[in-house]
Length: 321
Image 1 (cartoon, rainbow, N blue to C red):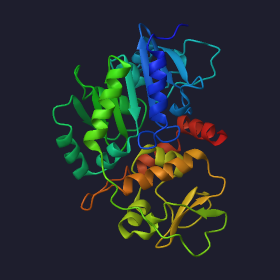
Image 2 (image 1 turned 90 degrees about the horizontal axis):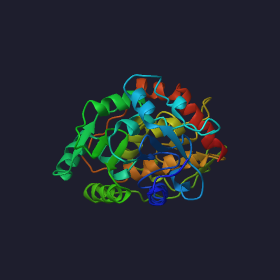
Image 3 (image 1 turned 90 degrees about the vertical axis):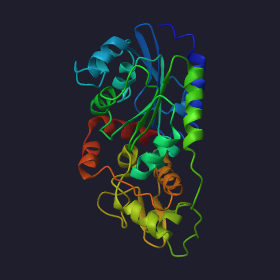
């Protein structure tokens, strides 16, 4: 089936977002473009960085996917795929892409946005910084249908910027160029400077089967260590690293551990997605201002993600890369 006229520019924007770890990490984030009754959406488990060199987009029936957003079907949008021979599975967030009445939608896990939206004080600051723009804030909800419903309950026809608390950013517009400009505007307004992050390489041997990382500063900074050990602050951390960071190896074979006061170690053989999410945690915590509290998504939300078949599928694909 024919691609939209803007597909080349759309792929370029998607690849640029996916290649910037301050916008997207690993297999996170997703983009979509609509033309008539067809919507092209990033496939689950693929990486936006590959948008110009690999076929990562799957065409779905936009009306059928929008119907799932409003309660018809299970919300997976598997049955909305137009090519029955395709092995690609639509993103778990296809429903909100279909429900948003804009031709181009980009969802990122922007570090600047995350730094603000995991904190009550950060959310207040972000609202002030985004004044004059067509934005809404949406409280944390499980990705998929629960998140789509929260979004639809809050947006208006004019909404183009959606800040997802404890999750990320959505920008929408009529063209690829307009979305790119909107993303840049939000990023510039929410930009956060590096406030900490230098560390001393640990002198003691790492735990068996692990190697010390450049993010060991987290363990050497009292506040950052407490934050990293206390909870998970956005979905992909849970999916790829597990709940919070443990301080010892255990039967769950965590990908990363924090040895308090010493360093952060990554398991040998860790996947690129796990490495990317550890970098993401470091990028967020290193920008968090003093005096900003942060709120974890909580044990119940973590359990929902860990026991979810859609995320197990994405984990399995990431492990193959």
